[in-house]
Image (cartoon, rainbow, N blue to C red):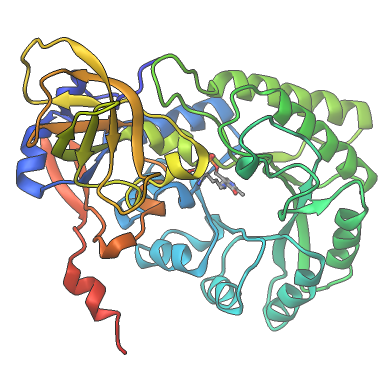
Length: 419
Ligand code: LLP
């Protein structure tokens, strides 16, 4: 499976721009993002799911350009905080096409949602119904809400990514009756409209079966309620991080899930709801490449290649045991490849970018390394551990490279420290 951006010419250039040139112009580490790739994935999703809705999950990667791209491609937007909403609002993303999620929405998140007039709020706890209803009270139109349901589907992924099983913090259980309780409360609030149900069963899900099962369970619940206009099946579609992996094919997903919904609705005799899916990773992961400069090579029991970034720009290996591939770019020597472990510069032994990956035996300080499939949950999850400033995001398209998010500086970090 190709794990490089669609416009990549081997790993040496993306969007028609040599990666060496980007590193020289903008420095390292740097996140590179291929605009064409993002747009292409948006179109794949729109096409496969037509006439249903596709809402890009902003938590995967968000900046103003990204908001504009998904808007131009006709997607809706899923936000999970007032901060993501503020970013979307700053470029005028239409509020009626925004959904707000969150298992713990702060008063500020909800105030921002009402202030901008977001289209849908996804209720995630029984107590939230009254809070949302109170805010919706003074308005002319009822607020549309979806109730997030836990369908008890185990997608067989990393524990931190299974969000549709019973014993975790998201959603309202079908089995315990909490979902039915929340639905009753929503229906009892004149300032709210129950638009439909929502679920999100997890992340990096490679097969469509779990989605089909969840969809069937939610449709059955909808049938008890006499049918509802909308059914949101969340995101979580897997991508390949390494060449031997495979992602969830969107057309296979669409065929399988649309089929299951149609069948189940027919069996219950209710009209088919409008579906929404919320892909984040599947839109943007493979659009991104991270560039690092090698700082040191240490030979020992294994060979460590130390780079100028690490767990502050990619915490995923430490958090989920995620594995990546690494390529050297810019210097071709024909040297044989040997297994090496690429590590970061942080003061922590778990600061590993990729363990036992093949790299040319003559790799040395100053070489440029590229790590593909770093567009989702990298910039979004970056930290300032060790007071390390976060890398810039550089867009590429048609032979041009330009910054979307500038590199953070030590001054940026110190400015927040007001003590
Ligand atoms: N919708 C909801 C309600 C979600 O909670 C999420 C992800 C998505 C959509 C998008 O999921 P995607 O299609 O991107 O998998 N930090 C982890 C992933 C956590 C995802 C949380 N929710 C990672 O780096 O893999």
